[in-house]
Length: 254
Image (cartoon, rainbow, N blue to C red; front, side, top):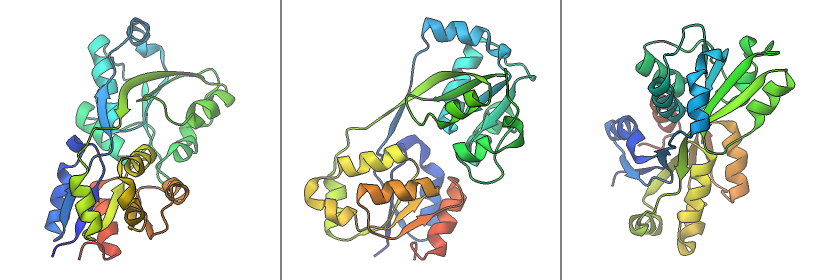
């Protein structure tokens, strides 16, 4: 029987990862624990985006921030080449290139998280610079707080919202009871939290024993706090290729 690799990403973001898992000889099990929906622009944000070229730097937190943020921005204004564009991870960088045909001006060379972006040379001397952070609703405040401490004038554009989907758990329960899941791919703290909440109590102990494939070291601590006492593997970044290579390297696909 083929091993099942459980994918918790939003349903519309799984196609390449599903294909890679199948090509490696395993069976993907899609159980999205996040749903992504755009947030309509408020009048305040429309006014902000009409002056978007007054910002020195725009930071996109995620591929979803690129997609929904640029839809909002370009629906209101033309974006000047003088505005520097930054992404936290390689997935966001690829999304930006696909959408605008250009690489970000600022992106970490390693540590694809807020700490990695804050360590880049371009974000050290930001006193009096205007910075727009494009993100989903809520999330970590580290980026904004640190940039403000460095003297920047920072604003948010909440471009999309993350929702916990209403999902039938029948297949999840069946797979857990029959030990058919080899590993779970987790790409955000919220998707991990939702997974635990969405799993029926009677099979939650089985869930907490399963290996996790995580995309950064911060998620390791969050997984342990959530009660996972299993093997926790960390990919070098959130790209589909790196996730699949990490699964292969740790013999989770065959």
